[in-house]
Structures are given as structure tokens and as C-alpha cells.
Amino acid sequence: MVASGAFYTREGDAYAATASTVGPWDKALQHGGPVAALLGSRIERAAASADARVAEFALEFLGPVPVATLDVTTELVRPGRKIAFWSARAAVAGREAVRASAWVLAVSEGRNPGVRLDGEPVPPMPSAAATTYFTSAPRFGYGDALEWRFSEGAFDAPGPATVWARLRVAIVDAEPVTPLSRVLAMVDSANGISAELGLDTHLFVPVNLTVSLARPPATEWTAMRAVTSLSSDGVGVTRARLFDERGRIGEALQTLYVEKRA
Image 1 (cartoon, one colour):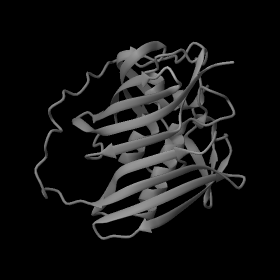
Image 2 (image 1 turned 60 degrees about the vertical axis):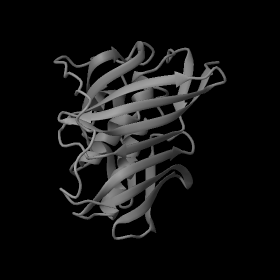
Image 3 (image 1 turned 45 degrees about the horizontal axis):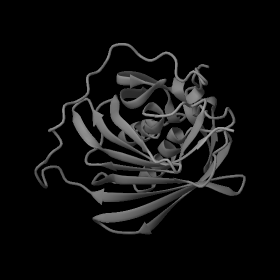
């Protein structure tokens, strides 16, 4: 599968999903990464300010997201000069499928000293990119829409993993990709790269995603060190530490629904 030039094409306030949004679970369903990047970028555009940025982004999946046209709305929930709270929603044929929120904080370089962002070494950057993904899903649009380089683990290797990624496509056709979008497009795959169970034997579906960024990425490549923990009653948690090529930038958290495939 060859990735198209963008995850979405714009049609007014609606966004038509391309083949690059397709995830590994079902060819008719979008991966969460493109959806997160789309809603994050819509909040950024609505809240546009040179002196503020998204510091925390949360996404709630209200159901599977089909490869279809998304109607997107944004809302300023809590105005504030220093601290503001925004929300965004995506609906498919009148059904709300995804809900997002973001804290937008005022920033000023030099306002306080940086603390504990440089204490963890940046993961090494491998020279070779992954060319296949999961045994049961060797190619899918979202996988091909990013370049993946593993410094620990692999798509088909169970357990913790560390991967660098960069986008090969835009989020929305003819729009520049923002630093926030680079992270959001990648990070919803944390549970997939650090899976403890086989994609062909189990479902481990994230119901949400929370990303906190101490600073935005400053480079094209972003990385995550991800680990998944599973309870025997069918609930899991994936945690990821986030990096750019200069150092640590933040953290991400997912809650998983887990069950054996029928």
C-alpha cells in the first residue's frame, strides 16, 4: 500500500479520510493517530497565538472511526489569557465518534529554568527503517504514512519498544504540519509497538489517549519509549516517554480494552 499525500482532504469544516488513515485492525477503520493529529491541529488553528501552545491533549474514542468524512467542530470551553481550555469533536454521519480536549497555556521563553528534561539520554537513531509491520497486517495505510526506526523492539516483537518516527504525509492536504501534529500522529501507536499479546490472537484497543508536553518537538523526528502493562481481567495501560532529537519532551498514557479474539 502506498501512502497518499495527506491523511485528510478538506471539504469546508469536514475532512475526508484517505487510505493513509487505515489502521491494522480493519481496512474500513481509521487508526487513532491521524484522528488525534487532526483534532489537535484544529484546536491549534482555533486557538492560534504566538504566545501560547497546547501543553496537554486528551482524546476519548466513543466508538470505531470509519474511513469516511469527519465533521469537526471546536469550542473554547474556558477562556483565559494565561490558561485556556478547548474542546473538539469529530462526527461521522451525525454520530459523534471522537472527543478531544486541550489545555492551552501562555508561554514565554526564559520565564523559568528548565528542570529534568535533559536527564534521560536520547534514544539512538537507527539507520534502517522498518519495512513490514505485524504478521497479520504486514501493510496498512497508517503504517506506510510514517517512517519507523526501532532502536528497541519491533512491531512484531512483544514487550517494551523504542521507536523513532517521522511523517511521510501531511495531516490535511496543502496544510503545513505543526510540531504538535508530529507527536500526535505517532503516539497513539504506543500500545501497538509495545504490545504484550499478538495482534492475531487478541484485541488491545485504546479507549483514550493523553499527551502532556513539557515542550514541543523541535525536530522532524520524534521518538517514544513505550511499555504496556496488562491485568488478567482485561484492562491494560500503556505509558510512553516522548523525545525529539534534542531530548525529552513529555509523556503519553493510554487505557486499553483487552480480550481474546473470537
